[in-house]
Length: 201
Image 1: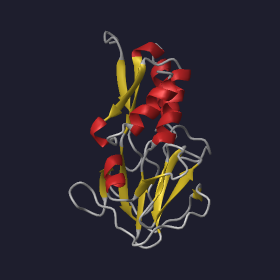
Image 2 (image 1 turned 90 degrees about the horizontal axis):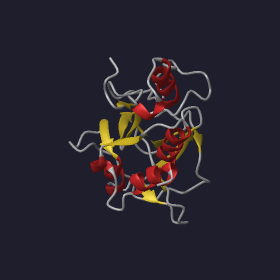
Image 3 (image 1 turned 180 degrees about the vertical axis):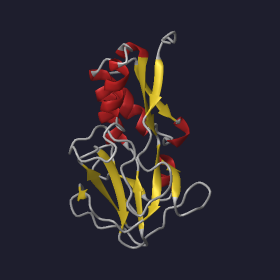
Image 4 (image 1 turned 120 degrees about the horizontal axis):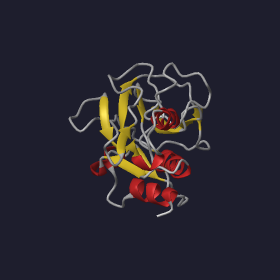
């Protein structure tokens, strides 16, 4: 039944079930490398599935996360995006809101813990901090943090990846974007501002 005015769907992170020693991306934009084990679990595929089922794009809103997942892992398979940024010392170990070293974590929590720090060049983006290096997964268009000092990998979304998802929603003429949840954003509304900018608001 399509009696709803619009349908809200949220991207389910590929590692949402549990922390993994081989973590996947947080909420993929698409399957850019055509190598995903779950090729239908990304924003582009979800939009295609709902419109193929008969829903008009204006009935759809794309759900995007303001959280990520910490995993106990030493994997280093992603290409580094930053240009040889020397991590500040001392290094930190990221924790969830409950104090665990694996599980979900809000974007604001990563900033508050020093795992993410504002780009000093004023780009509006964030770099890794506290011994974490920010890397970029070109296959899913999502960021990834890796520590050289503790076995942790953090798959998450940030201003760049949410901007790309919002631009896709605008391009595909969806009704908009819904962030779950605003509590995960910074006090300066960095994530919301990125979404709004990419939607042309």
